[in-house]
Image (cartoon, rainbow, N blue to C red; front, top):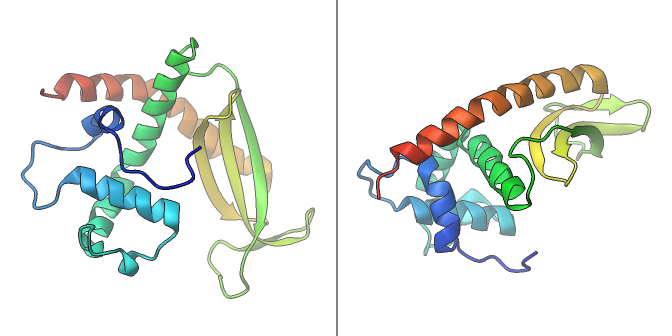
Length: 180
């Protein structure tokens, strides 16, 4: 694990660039936008405090919001998980998954998606995660802590099953559409 932020390398960018529309003419370089997002994620900086050597924070947020709504980050995560599994000598899709949830305390002023987990005596949110046997995160969701684990897992399992079927097609089409 790296201790300091570093920009994307050429092989890293080559692995994720098929998921972005690079043919369209833009005023901002998408690689710089992705680097800025990764820098924000690593440092925890606020959007408006993005340093001036990055694109303007509103442009970075615009692309982040567009990609989030389009599900680009989930597609990239699934494709990178598949590539990592193949490099480890495993099948691209896991046959065994682990589901777990974790209740997390919240600051008293945060009111959205908040509840009391009576078993753990925590007033906050619950993170539900699906990982494979080697710890790769496949699907995650956040909800109020007072919701039961079983009903929270059902949409995540459905989401995972849908991804296993659709990522094969989506990843192939992204690679085939790429022009060098």
